[in-house]
Length: 277
Length: 361
Image (cartoon, rainbow over all chains, first blue to last red; front, side, top):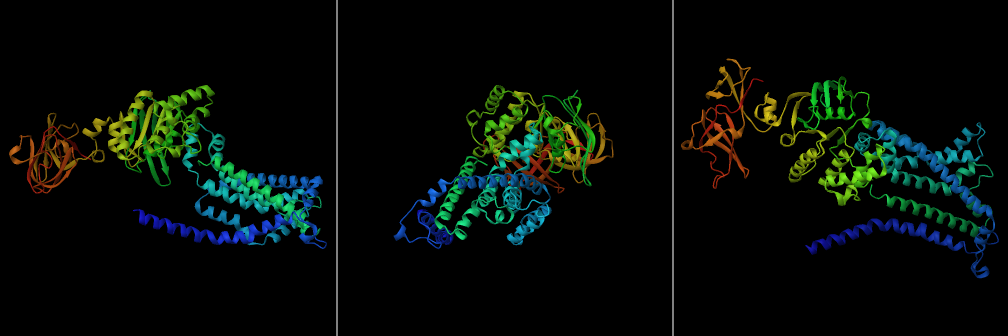
């Protein structure tokens, strides 16, 4: 029945357009175009009192990038941001994995309560929660230190690790673990040979959801970190608000975006290679 | 000494006694089946043999060794799960190699034995495939190869053919028998499908409500069931309520209400006055037009109420003149034998004096 099938094809295509068009338009206007403006700005000269120098006067310039390459401090801060993001991701994973397993293995009603507890912090304002950490960490003499930054980062991002892990682990067939045990695998072997490899998609998406935001986060290091705990996010914020060097801020933003895209791409490739699960 | 000895095991789940004081021996090299309706306790027994469950009372011995303190991963017992439980992230070869790796075999040995197991189940060319790329029958074979590759003392099979369609199921039954004969591993098979149990097993334990009703070879279970439950659960059977008039070593004389006298084969425990039922298989009943009677000892008249044509045979449901409904099976061997009797036809039902079995419970 070619006629009716082509009609359903057409209506399916129309539906697809109706569903995807609004978010696509939104993203083009509020993400893609600003990102391009930002990229353009990174190749300009700073204006005298902030903003950008008129293109007619200064012309395009690579000064911002030259500046970044000249001073090793920028590479150092980027590396430190990666290190903090990596450490935060690992700690979140170590905390979240056993917790997600515990939630999955608890009875249905308790499970819902646990999930509610995981997302409950979102009900109160992010900044208020960070201020609360200042009150907690202050008396412990940990405030304004890298430790405080990592504590804050882990605290803020832990739910983003727990939820994907929970979603993944919940789908595991308990018969698989039983089969592993039946075939001679002890508890650890069963975990490493069955549960862990099957949970890798969840581990990767949770890690992306933690690693990428931490890389650009500026509020936590600003409030909990010391003067030496400047990360990429703070650096960029400073260029725009304090130093009024927009091109430098734009260039740093662009570099951070590229770094994030590289991480996301890597994670996507890793997930695809595990695609059979 | 039997390979597996089960001694008076009881397993309770809350108030429910899933397994009630069950004892049985499984000999080495046998194809042993636990047969029963769902909830009869057969799967619970299987899980206790595998080690996933522990009896509340009683003990299991494998090669004379008590199993109680041995966790599942250290029992030389592997299971073929109902859902197959193949590891989705491992290839067919990876799945089959798993128990060998867990047992710490050398790399060479793992490769060699995985290859042998693949050949055993005719999947040589599927070693690199992932489980989701296989058909139901192929998954089944991988699960079997994985269960057998490390040469367990016992292979447990939990309704492994349940998910297959009828045709494939029959083919896998044949393969299972051949496989068991080839590898010589003792199989403990759990099923609710009585025909499957009859076709596959050396011995069958028929279970009901946590107890073993009868443990016997398939022929004995079918021909001489010891209880109404077994008679009814295995195959189809006609139950005719009757009272013993006379019992001796040559046979029984029964009185069936409204039918009159019936001759039945001897039963040691039968005494005059005992009430019970004569159980006769449909294929033992001969259905014929009145003119075609061959003069068997037991003969009654009735009317064809229903006929179910199945191709090779036709099942007739005949209402006897006293109202009793009997099922008779006629093979359609000769030409024109199909639907020989029409609904409403007057027919005669007759059977030999030594057919059937008298059941007092």
